[in-house]
Image (cartoon, rainbow, N blue to C red; front, side, top):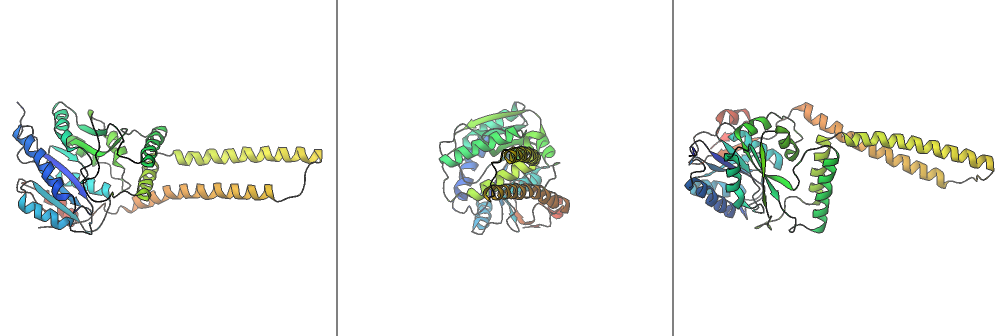
Amino acid sequence: MVNNEVNILTIIIPCFNEEEVIFETAKEITSILTQLIKNQKISKKSRILFVDDGSRDNTWSCIESLNDSNKYVSGIKFSRNFGHQNALIAGLTMVEQSTSIAITIDADLQDDINIIPKMVDEYLEGADVVYGVRNNRKTDTWFKKYSAETFYKLMEHFGVKMVYNHADYRLMSKRAIHALLKYRERNLFLRGIVPLVGYPSAKVYYMRKERYAGKSKYPLKKMLNFAFDGISSFSLAPIRIIMYLGFASIILSIALMVYTLIQRFLGNTTTGWPSLMISIWFLGGVQLTSLSIIGEYIGKVFTEVKQRPRYQIEKTVNSKTQIDMTTKKASLTGQKIS
């Protein structure tokens, strides 16, 4: 018999301008939560935690309304937009002491919530981390599909351990959360950090759906920045590529010098600017690219050494099933508890 009163589940949902979908999201996830409680898989103290990442619409008002009408709903409101990854970390930090397991999922209902019971079953069978993994990319555009595949292959080539076709839909046990929060870097890329935690893991596969409503919060520019952040946060390969490129340039220069001397002795040389201009543009491009990559790493070091807070919490609302919202951590982040 499972001791369901021990297994407190918190479903963490980061939100940024999600007023169009948040009520439906709360309704569907509440249905899954009550089903698990009825089946005695989880505690009646389980809850849903929305993290408002500085939304500019009525997302927070919706969360407050849900808190009044839904006994499972609690919420955190950031003082401004701090980013999706920081929203996830904030949620995990707030529930670390008061929950047994946490599931992180986006608010847009693209990830199949019907696999949550399977995730819980995997946890009950001994898995500390359960990854929600897409079994296809039929809902993606051609560009997004192949750019994502290229990204995963690049990360693997650079030696970064990631779960293929997994985003941030996952279950984590209390000890896995505790281990994850020991990673203090500000340049967060949780898809790469979570596998470093270790502990037994499992995968649950699902088909991703279209957004229920609203627009994607990851346009092309943001996706590219996120991908490069992931590469530069976990691998020194780009720096090494610069070194190899430098060696290749030296070898090419020596080869051109030998070729020029041979042509000079053969009397085949003519005065002209094409070769000179090509060399200047080539070396200039190499230098600018190299400086940009090195600058990216220096920028990350600059961000880390300042040790600025990952987020600031303006206020919270607590669910009626919740005993404690870790007020100690709340005071450390300067939040106001309503």
